[in-house]
Length: 281
Picture 1 (cartoon, rainbow, N blue to C red):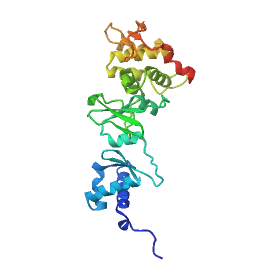
Picture 2 (spheres, rainbow, N blue to C red):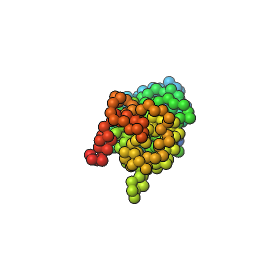
Picture 3 (cartoon, one colour):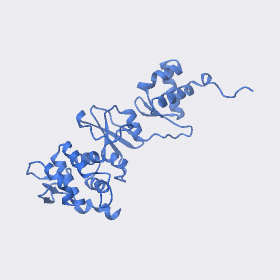
Picture 4 (tube, helix red, strand yellow):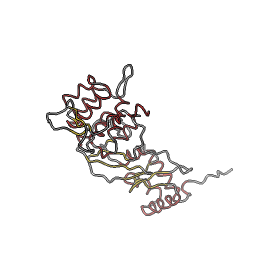
């Protein structure tokens, strides 16, 4: 009895293109994500020409089998119309290395925050266009290549270690993480008596020294002092810098509030807000 299966060579053009893109994405280790700059030749081989490849893509788009993420990047849908791709693998497929996902999204990955941050900040040494996916904004921040450090994952999406993510939050409030949210992440990560933590204080101090910002060192030292006591915060004292001008705890807030001579800070964020998470969970 003859097989009822139709050979791939006899299937519609869009179907041949869909199979070819799935195979190519799988071979590249990024299924179900297609990058035309890398995959177009495999697609042309399946369709017979560049023009037919473009026709097949348009048809697959109309059929709902591929979804455009941004120019040159597509997501392959399952037969049920769903996809297993999440934002971080998309970032990894789209963004040239080196790069670093930091701030709120990195904190969430380490379960140091249960907030939903609609902006994912990605450090990169080159200027790239921001993009959005399903209501999530991906914002690229250009930094010098030597500023891309603190990588947690050697393979897969490049995510910042918690120490680096917290430093970036305290240095860049425009990236969407408030001082109370950074304090909560720090509180979750630091060890407690009899309980190991994800953030080692000495590693945090070394990362702060490498970060090279006396203002951030003061903010972080104050928070560690508030959350774990002055003895635990001791390593940050020598990182405060020599300036006698006070620094704002919340750099985007008003220049008002009590001062902390120990840390050279103006406490312009309600201290109760910094520990409110302990009460409300």
